[in-house]
Length: 334
Image (cartoon, rainbow, N blue to C red; front, side, top):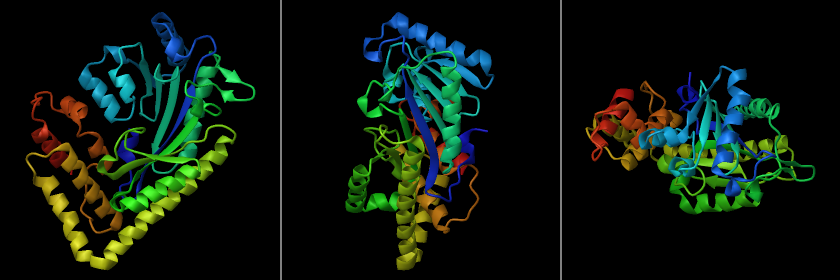
């Protein structure tokens, strides 16, 4: 079962993930990596993993169509840079989608592990298992004092970025408070970004909260600090929901059920409107107001209503008018 099939819509915490940035000692960093070296490196990683584990599959990104790349991006398997590049790059994924190894992005490899909810410990173990599997046959670029060497100095050290995907619609509404929290978190070595990470927007009120510091602190300490930060943000969101219920429960309830009605019966819907209404509906589930049974986790629906995913599900979809297909997908999954 894929990780997003098990998301609990009753919590602001959607998922947790951990990313390890690594480079190999025998190759120059990506900015000076020749195409032949890039191809050779990909083959080396492929040989280090696939023959030793049946749990992984290999994907050559340049061989994928624009639609297929879009879907990989929408499902957080590749970055926007990789989706657009023509250089040799690849993806090795576990069958259950909990682990993704991206080759030739900013660094030689990016190991990402992901799970629903807040089980950051299991995500940490999965990433380390994959890291060890590769390091058994390939030597990383490592400095005795500075740790793992990376293309961007901000990742040097542990090379680890841990993050939580959070649904924070009411905090987002209070822009001044959200800006204040973001500044406060930055002073503590944390960062708040949009749904697809750096330079992306918070579509559907989805935010990524992650550590900025990768050097000078043990990984376990960084994870504990991140969990504490996430707990504070989640509690702030739940307090705002509680205030909504106390101030005018009937209006709050009406907003949520209007969102559900539009999603359930609309024949055409834009991506922006769909994500906003799905966010409202998910807030209704968290608050306990909306108790109807939903076939599919709301966040999974959010992941599958952009171009790439819809084009995969609706092969006869009109390229210029995807709004009817988006509405149909939502109706079928609510």
